[in-house]
Length: 130
Image 1: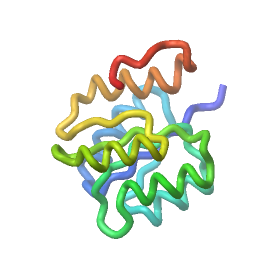
Image 2: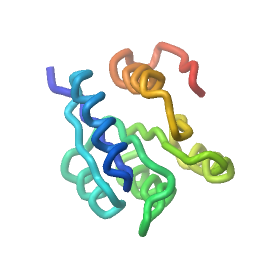
Image 3: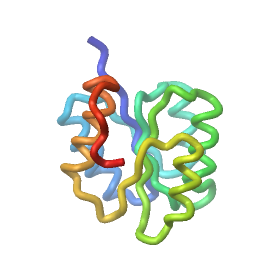
Image 4: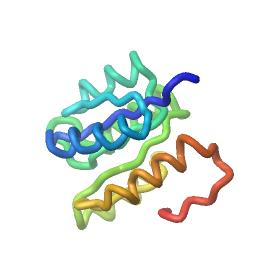
C-alpha cells in the first residue's frame, strides 16, 4: 500500500523537524516547506494527502497558501496551525476549506490523533477536535 503523504508548512525549523519525526514514525511520507513558494511546489509535484499549515508565514501567509492549495486540488486535506489570537483568520480558513486548527503550542498527541483520524480511518469517525 502506498504511504500517505503529509506536508508540513511552517517557517519555524524546530516545529517542522518535530512534526516530520512524529509523522514519519507514524508511517507517513513527510515533506516540509518553510514558505509558501516551496509548499506550493511540493503540492504540485507530490500531491500530499494532508497539509499541516502554519497561519503566519513570512511572504505568503497561510490563508493565501490555503487558497492556492484548494484551488489547485480541493481533495487535499488541510489542518491549520495558529498562534493564539488569530481567530478571525481561523474563521476565514475554515470557510476556505481547512478542516480544523491547532493553537500553538499544540499537544503533539492530539495532532497525531487528528491526522491519523483524517488519513487512516476514512471519513466515518466524527472528529472530536472540530
